[in-house]
Length: 116
Image 1: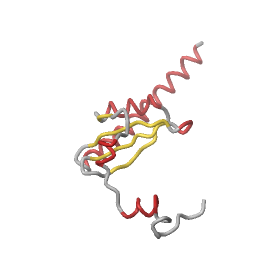
Image 2: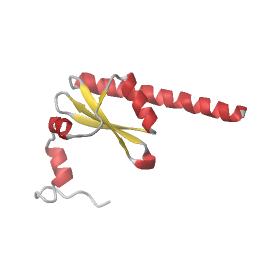
Image 3: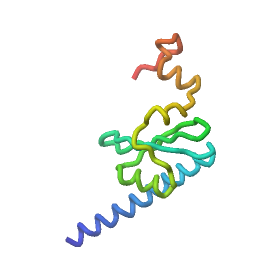
Image 4: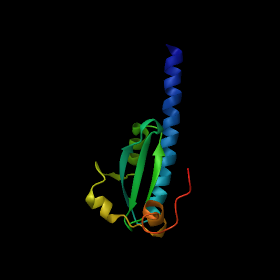
């Protein structure tokens, strides 16, 4: 039983460090973009994506190993979370030429995405 408790304690400490690192990155993004809101999205075994939308329309994302770590990071960073990536939040996102060529470049006559 002691090994199990020790392993859980080590995992909790690791997740705490990971959440602190993510919170620092969230804070830096928010500072650079005049504040930020976020949304947490499960991405399967890879973990949970923390989608960030800055007040200025810039966006980015981070990946946490678990949903609990993502929630803890958002809490530590005082990030306002939205339950859904709804129209209101999506309308704030500002995309540029890079996103257009990556998401729709082939259809719009832009450069093709490299073969996988």
